[in-house]
Figure (cartoon, rainbow, N blue to C red):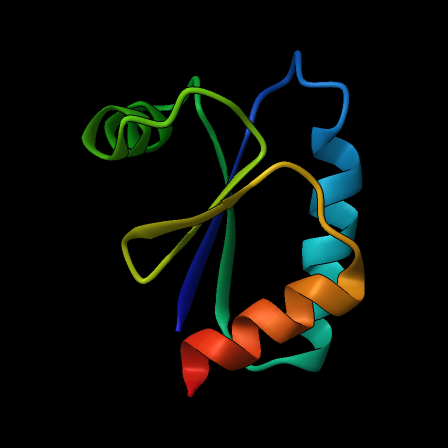
Length: 83
């Protein structure tokens, strides 16, 4: 499972999302990557998926959530996607 967390340098909640998703990546097997929306890859993702806000989570090419979720919800989401 490929998980991309889209963030921005100006986003006040993105560091918290990075910490939570980093913890989840240690517990659940995944290909985890933090993508800044100012980078080319990030711009392509937000354009293709019409993402309007960050932090946003893209799993296997599909937008799955926006905002910051507690670790338990993140792990539950990953379990649902993997099932």
